[in-house]
Length: 565
Image (cartoon, rainbow, N blue to C red; front, side):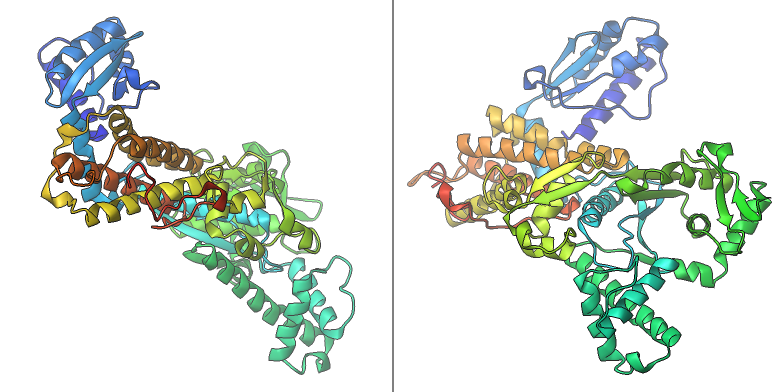
C-alpha cells in the first residue's frame, strides 16, 4: 500500500462514516499522511481528525476513534492507534508495506512524480549573468538551485520555461567593448572597464576574426569589438552551463526589447493603467502605491530609458508570452529589487502575491588549496568544474537553503568518503548496483518470485517507510521552492539503506538455495536504487554504478563488503 493509497482509504473511511451517520462533516478532497517522527508510532500518521473536529462538533479524539474502527478493517492495515489530541497512527502489515517495493520498481523513473503543481504555468528566470565576463561562483549557486527547482517543478506537474535574461544593452556593453579594444591595442582598459585576463583572450578572438580591427575608425572598431566579444562571451557562458548540466529553454535579449520598441510600449501601457507621471522632466512609475520604498524613474530627463524601464518591459513580455506565474532567482546584491519588481507586477494589473515570486540567495565562498593558485578574486564556474566537478558542486549547493550564507572547502567537496554527502549518497546507489550484479551471479532473479510478507525485519520496515515518503518530499520541495529537502531526504535514505544492507542479506550463503526471501529483498534493493537515482536526477547529479572510496577506507563500491561477500 502506497501513501497515496492509504490516503484514499482514509478518505473512504470518512465517507463511510458520514453516510452511516457517525460523523457530520464535509469530507475533504484530499487527506494527508506523513511519516511519524518515531518509527514506534507506526508507519504513517494523519491529523485529519483534528482538522474535522470543529465541523463534527465533537472532540478530535472522538473523531479519531470512530475513524480508527473503520480503518482497522481495511485490508493491509495491521493496527490503528489514537495518539495525543487526536492523531491517527497507522501500521501496515508486512505484505501491504512491502508491496511498495514492486510499485516503485515498476514505476521506475516515474516514481516520485506527482501533480502537486499541475495547472501552474511558470517562467523561471535564473543566473542571467552579464555577457561581459565568465560565470562566477555567485552565478554557480543560482545555476545549481535554479536548475534543480526547474526539475522539481516539472516533476510536480507544472509547465515551466527556464529562461536566461541576457543583459546585452546599456553602458556596460560600451565599457566591455572599450576594454576589449584596449587589450587588442596592448593598453590598459579604460576606467570602469573590465580588467580580467579573459578580456585579453577575447581581444585575441576578435582580432583573429577581424584582423583589420585596429585600422578601423574608433566607433566602428568599438562596434566590432562589442559584437564579436559579446558573441564569444555568450557562447562561453552557454557552453559552461551545458557542461554544468544546466539547460535554458529561452535566452532572452535585453537589446531585443529596446530594438522592438518594447520599453516605450511598456511606459505607454503602464501610463494607461494610471501609474505613470511626469516630474522634474523625467517619467516616473508610482510604485510607492504598491509597497516600494520610492517611486522609480522610467525615462530620464534626457530621454534615455532606465534599467528599471527595461525591467518593466521584460515583466510585461513574460506576461504577454502567457506566463501567469513568474519566478525570479536573484543574488544577495539584488535584495532591493524585490519591492520594485512586485510593484511592477501590481502596476501591470497583476497580483504581486500570486503572479510574481522573487527568491534572494545569499553569498557563497569556496576555499581550499587550489584557490591559492588563482589570480584575482574571481572564482569562475569553469574553474570549479575542473577542480571539483559538476556533481560535487551541484549537490552541495542544492543541499542548503538559498537564503543561507555558505563558506565551503573545495577539498572537502572532492573527498571520496562518507563525510562528503554527495559521495555518501552516490555510494549508496553504487552499492545497490553491486548487490544486483552479485545476486545475479548467484542466480537470484527478481522475476522468479516476490513475497512482500517476508519483509519483516525492522530495517526493512524503516527503509520501506522512507521510500514511500519520496513523492511527498518532491512535491513539498517544489511547492516551497526548497531543493535542499530532496538532498537531505537522499542522505536519510542512504543511511537507512546502509543499515539494511548490514543487517539483511540479499544473496544466499555459499551452498544455500535461492529462496523467495532473496528474491524479494532484491526487489527492495532495486526499489532503493530507483529512488536514489530519481532523487539525484532531480538535483542534476549523476547516479554512478561504481565508485571507489578514499584509499584510507580500504573498500570499494564495486566489490561487496564481507557481510555480502
